[in-house]
Amino acid sequence: TMRMGVYKRTGSFNGIPLNQLPFAVPQEVFSTNPLGIKDRDGWPDGLLQRKVKLRTNLLSTALDFVSNGHCAIFIPDFVAHNFNKAVLPENRLSPVSIPTKLGVLERKVYLVTRLAAHEDRAVKKLAAAIRKFIKYV
Image 1 (cartoon, rainbow, N blue to C red):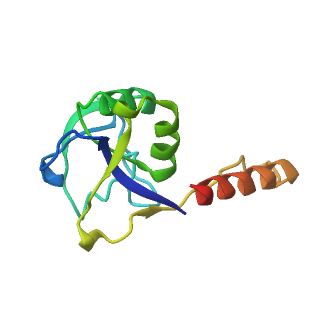
Image 2: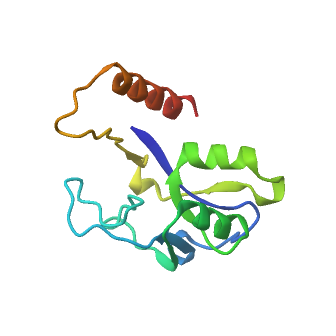
Image 3: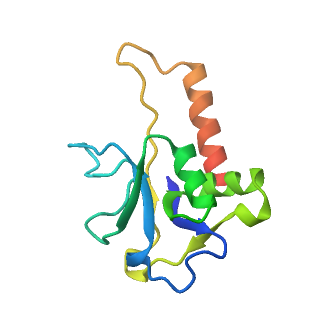
């Protein structure tokens, strides 16, 4: 399980309510999926509407827009943490307060392998590394 959050460039959009923030979101949407998530970023669509400003195919493009102060983004906390380590202080991301009615936003992470593939030692090591990385941040 990984924690999710809304992030914006530090110092931008101060005083703007969450439902008025412009967002960068993934270009593609899911038609159907077992998790009931419409947008690829896992936004809680049924609980809170958001203002979509930009649609991108790449997370790196969306992060560029956010770090330049054009919009906000909904991403895992560990992504924001690692992004902030790699950019100048003026381009860092800061969390946006979310309504308490949403509670803690978390998403489950699944490691999907081919049906014919066995869960070998390499897959188990990869799963352990992912768990450790997500919990570390």
